[in-house]
Length: 242
Image (cartoon, rainbow, N blue to C red; front, side):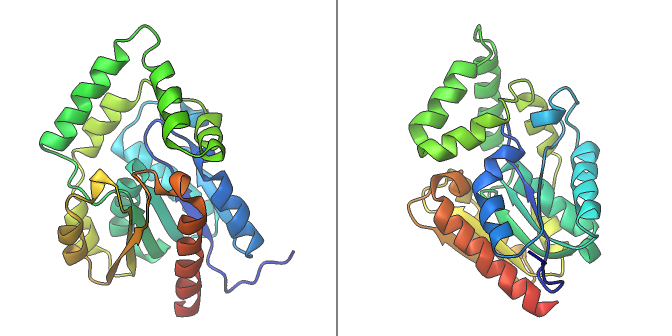
């Protein structure tokens, strides 16, 4: 199928401990709709699991993905990927036609982040470094297909503390304010990372909040049909605007 040039390419950035495989459902549907799509692995994850996770390395991984898609994309990030998508858009607004920041409407520092880091360190001390718990929770909390997709790329068990520490240095509110293009803050209705949703929306120059009914933090996996419908709707708007 020949892809119309007017259809915006879409770059997908995964959450912590996951990989590009978590986007399999979205990749299939977006390609069927005529979009060029690329899901990348961040350092320390998936096929790059042996690489150290740092802020510059994560932003370089996104930049490489943007270049592979032609230099201008609809940038979609969830959770960890959302924070780095926001940071990238602020630094390279000319390369981001539109931004979807999903599951990342909480300031990544303070009690929330430190509690998360403490829990991650405790889990990492388990004999299997938390693999059984990671896989068990995925199968318990996600639909079967979503669990298969998120587990297919392996579990990045060693990246939690370094990834969270690096993310604590980001300034997402300032980055949202710096990016002039359209922003969609997409959050599951039951997502605890909606904590600062109003502050995040207020920081955007051109922002919209979209809530995925019945979805938890990993909304793209918990409610894949609804999440993908949102992506397609946004991609249509970005395509028409550019």
